[in-house]
Amino acid sequence: MFGKNSKLIVDASLPWQAKVTIFPLIWFCDEDGIIDATPDEIAKQTGIPIEHIEAGIKLLEQGDPSRPPADGGPRIVRLAENFWRLIDHENY
View 1 (spheres, rainbow, N blue to C red):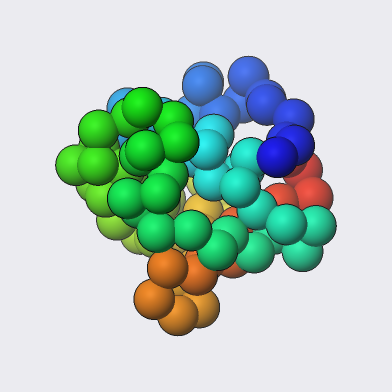
View 2: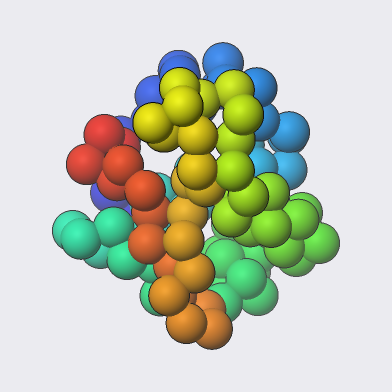
């Protein structure tokens, strides 16, 4: 697992559940930004309660009005059950 963290994530106007979820998603994604992990796996490996991970995923899948209009979409996109693509993963 590797992913650089950015103060921009912490400074973002994301709810705290999204903030505590995005970091593990960054760590879990592959070189193409694909995350292949169940919320339960993420919770077990990080110690973050499953309900916070599930809430964070839902928030990250929604559009973010605080981002510039071109980037105002979701931070992650569901590809299939337990598979997501991390938008802008190259920045992380």
